[in-house]
Image 1 (cartoon, rainbow, N blue to C red):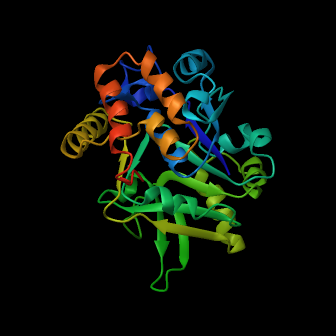
Image 2: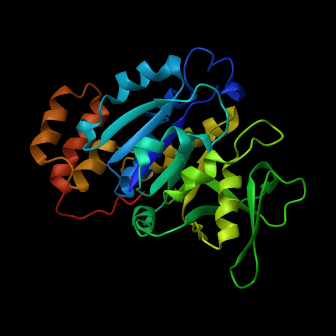
Image 3: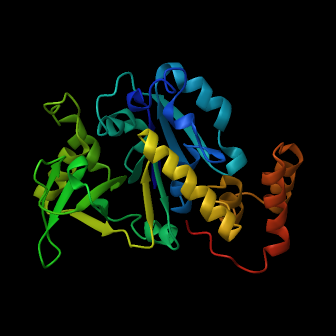
Length: 296
């Protein structure tokens, strides 16, 4: 299974702080925002990851993330020239995806919950598409899925004025390779974007759209506004301070997945400049026999 992080766009809702840098490079408490969606893909067992950025910001992402080998993964990079919609990520990533299935995640979405990684791994290899949905109080701001009493998907509507349910489609999606053709033939919406909901509706017409309703124990945070960015940073800080466990520590995830060895982790420690990060990574060795579950 391949992974795609869509980290393009202008971040206009966060101007002026995003006039000089990509939104996905902003800090969410103690890590760059993009670490969080990458961690979700890594927890799903994905090692081949395409990061889609704007042209003028791509070098900054490469300087931060390099080729991914330090995290036991393989990063590739591509450019989205304009914010033409989420579904465009599938056509941009056509050669990267090939005949494989893929998981697409938005670069400003944060997911955290015990068992989430195992839940995501379970979808690998299935045909069709899968949406990950979440109960919200302001459904009109999202793509909304309507489900009947038997659990059958009835409709998906992008930002409806009168939502039929309070179940929002999150910025995390699973597709088989058929999604590329659907995306290619999707016409831009009234707002000029190739909507991901249109691709999901193509799968719905085929009867091959599934969904996973994220549990109440899972947090889903969209960091696209000033308030939500602040809330996300507060959430991460509180969770880490109370549990003593790091969220989106890519080195830890790689190590626990067996993608980097003890020796490689020790080499990373030698160059780690942050005292708090170094102390945390050092603690992994002394607690490794406890078997703590870091399925974020």
